[in-house]
Length: 296
Length: 288
Image (cartoon, rainbow over all chains, first blue to last red; front, side):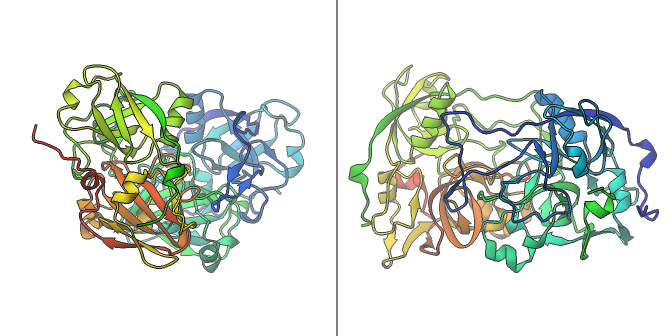
């Protein structure tokens, strides 16, 4: 990893805390509800969705084109009590190490790559494909959570959320005057941001909305991959997510696209600031797979 | 006069009870700048905020004008949500105000009813209000691609909609909202409650005069497809009703509840400051 000594933060004062989750089982609404969800045009569909061990979708793969609805790559974990799950969802940071503590996969190491929001609230963890075969639903995974409380020394007005020191070190950020330059692969305009607006930005997800396929294709947003770092334009995510001119968010694509209105690839917010203090710089490839040196 | 299937609609009773406001411990919500606040707003009998009043400026969060009712169990509450239509008549069926008649003016986390000024003092939390629900299934027979939601035949008639040609109609609205500020509620289906306009850019609210919005105003949103959820689609148009007041929270603001939607540019709109459900139903706030 390319540690970036130029941009200092309170590295020595960040506390590392265990948070635990069980591998989540996929779920559907109970009878007599139909199993179908509705696509934006009203077509009923039945597709794999969040939760579970996903064997064949990984960070680095395309976020689009899967026969799935906002599926989570790798493994999704949840904690069985609401408040405990909130602790897991908020404290786990993208880039944190996760260790399997029970079952046949005991000792396997993974990396947190995203979070999901309202209606599921999972933490999403990457493991190499070969080791996923050893996992069982309900296996315990401990995350050494580290990142909440992080302050960038020359940019105290930039709020970091779900951002691990590991990932911040790997992102090649630069200070230019009062701004922090952050490499991203795309900038998402406010009118293409949907579900997650008005909901918490300390965890969960904020989704691109992809109903207008022509608009998405014209902006080449359908080229995005899971794990890509992107910017949210005119979005203030300091205290929940919402529209504000000249506010900027940095996020990572955590979940795939899906057919529902208001939805598309889910993103986990990493940094946010108002008054253009974050300056996204578009590059060809800025993806967790390379940034964190993930194993396929 | 637009042709409808109003004669085919089924009218059905649904009931709820006047709700009690609730707060989560410790009650604080963060405002746009992160300051912790405790404010009244949702639920209950709101004595001094009514349909027709400003949507902005109250010392409140998500204030629900008039009386908010809910049903005790989840299934019954969904029926109350999905069957009640704007403009339906509501009748108080228990307590000191028994017999008082109101009008359904919104659907938020609860169903919102406007009563005449002398009714509020007689209402008690827990009193039962029954709605003659009518409007589900309502269609414009000559404009099948325009979908109506929670629209009573009475409201449709009152809105003064013009037929322009075989594909297009024109709806009077108080203002147009830009799609880029449509926020919280994008994660929900569009048959359920509302979507907030995001008022966090306070300067934009003043510049565009959106801060002049009133509770009960009809609004148009260009490029908004509200048929099955709420999403951006070029050329789609949705007509909505302002049902609750502003919020201090980021991603929130006055609530906009869908009344009409079309995936194609077949709904036009004309700005009319009188396009307010309070004007349409003669809901008048009298001095206390």
